Image 1 (cartoon, one colour):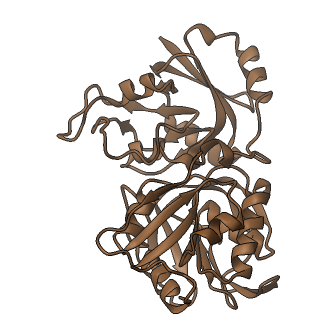
Image 2: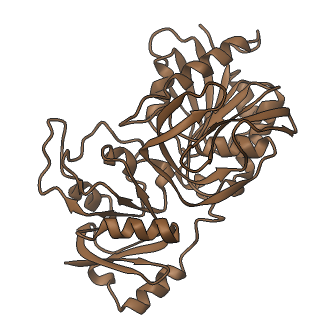
Image 3: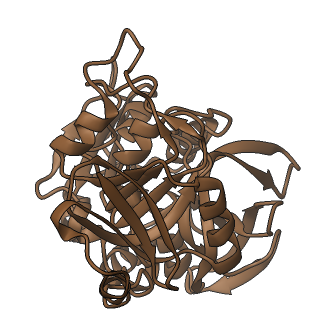
Length: 377
């Protein structure tokens, strides 16, 4: 059965229907990861994006019950070159195609993904649609549907992926710290990384108030990854400023990096085609250390490597950059206990070069522990 990927600039790629049949509308982006497709598909940061895999063959290891990063597949559509005919892994409980169909993710296979990625690199990420089955129509009709769909700029999406109720992930062994984590799209592996360090994580809805945070008497505050335009995240930004006023140690990643930047007075902007993959280098300005990182972001923070700037909480500094394009990859407040990075130290399926950032968060909480914070037991 035929399926098509339609881009807002009128370019159309034709292939075979894969996964569910119907329509998927979102922003067409590409990811360079050669492994970890299940983690990619279930990452809330990919909400309302049509993900193109640059790796030619996808689905070899099937689908399992352990690697989901959220309650289900988050992407708006999926595009692959050569889907595996049958999975081959002792951990597999089913095929990728079956998982996509079961969860209603419209996908297309058999297209020239190399040509598609070159097109997106030259033209930038753009609105797109995947169509198959009864939803196929004349090309001009499908192009019009794509152009009438919502843009990622100005998209307020974190509310669609946040938890509806608070929940707790206990520490492994003795609890050393208690952390309040604001869920604007948190991945399952993040609380696990904290748990291994003796951290009990209270995951809170994105609409949480400072009173709800203070009621936990947390040793630290965590800002998660998430989807959408950070310029729309006024609620989380306001809460972050209240956390900074109380000098609660703060660590943010990905979308959380952009939220902290806004709280510190910096602007954000949309990248041409973003950073998505598990092989993206980052340089730490102070040490020159290079880490290979997992990333998924289409927006970035304004600034340059090593830049020190003044904001409402005193001085802050741009601490990390991407050497590929100079994009800001991290920042730190110099007068309040807060830092963040644009990438994923909790990366699954890897790499793990940046996991020591959780240890830095633990060190920050240790250095700023006060009697009214009762996280240890």
